[in-house]
Length: 82
Ligand SMILES: [Zn+2]
Image (tube, rainbow, N blue to C red; front, side, top):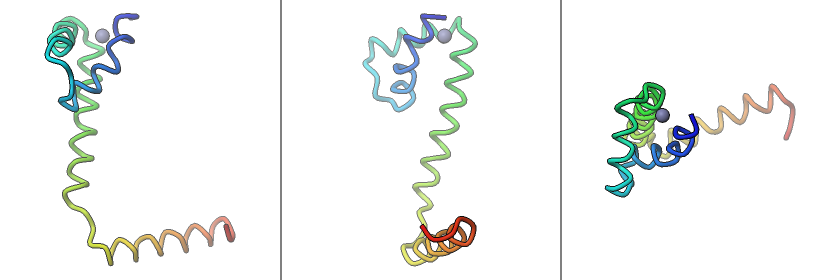
């Protein structure tokens, strides 16, 4: 378990593709016999992919500010003036 904790930050970097090759192979070794970390990598990877997709489909500025306005209005309605 403590080994997993040690690897968590490295795993995040590993997914970003920003990990030292040395550490990278260390992680891959660990992933081979650690189901928990494999699961975490899968989950994080999906999250990263979702985030990157979101970036690619960026809203046009006009639409984005309209959306912001709408959210702000709804927020103020619900919680009063901020
Ligand atoms: Zn692990």
